[in-house]
Amino acid sequence: MKRLRNRGFVLLFVIVAIALVGVIMIVLTAGSDTMMFQSDMAYLRAIERNLTASGLAWARLNVLDKSPETFNRTLSLDLANVGIRGSSLTIAIGAATDKQVEVRINTSCARGRRTRDHAEEYMVQLQ
Image (cartoon, rainbow, N blue to C red; front, side):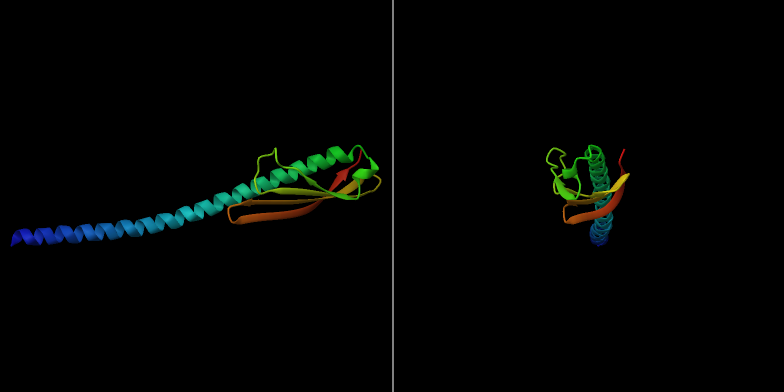
């Protein structure tokens, strides 16, 4: 009779341990989902900053030649060699004033189901 009680206790202990492992797995899964979301957003912010910096550098180089066909137009830059899938970079160069020109940079990047779009205007100095 004593043996049956021990077997029942061990079986109950195993069932409780399996349930506890299940709860721990649920908690760890929720934590890893949060970490994955945050790392995806940090990646998208970094890509956005890199695209904006690249667009601004391109605009500074191409505005300095001051050719008339550079101003008052919108260009979509080819990002095939950059290696960032699902991204786009559009630069709108406004009319030039005496010493500066307004440049609008639109970026878009995606990772998984998340997409980040950003548009901002910058003033580029003419020298």
